[in-house]
Image 1 (spheres, one colour):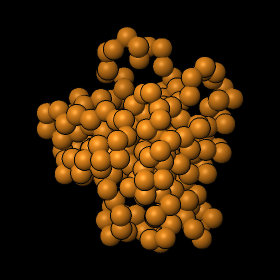
Image 2: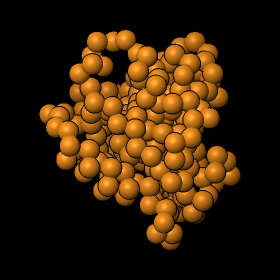
Image 3: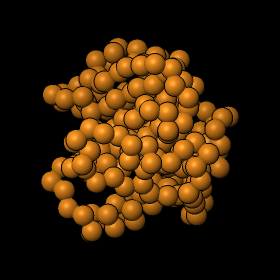
Length: 199
């Protein structure tokens, strides 16, 4: 089960269609996978607003989307998370906050070092800096470092050479410093979009 996380609200496709990006991939193992692309009413940051009951994205994903999917499809393995840009950040935060529920998370060209509410429409979803800290990847990694280093496999991957190249290089350095197993590759420079062949 691979959750392909959206970058946009509803079914907008300014940054491409994630399931169409999956559809043109040719590896044979993809034929044995179930791909799920949930939707969100607001711009997805995969977080729950601290005071607005109408903005509870993490709860929506974990308590509405996942039970519906597992009620209709059966797999023997823990699901995987795949995202790009904001949804790459979301894949990592969801994986790090719920390590017992997800096997691995992949981020492509994502703002992994996000630590304030100044950019990318974070404030309407995250609400406050205090709330952001509970989802912030840097903080989650520091808290999870001991658990993750004891694993015999890489559970986090970051790829991409586009809008967030510098953030990926900084995150790779941090993961290396924390001795956290991870997959890292820059690859050729590609447009910041689902349909540019990176997947």
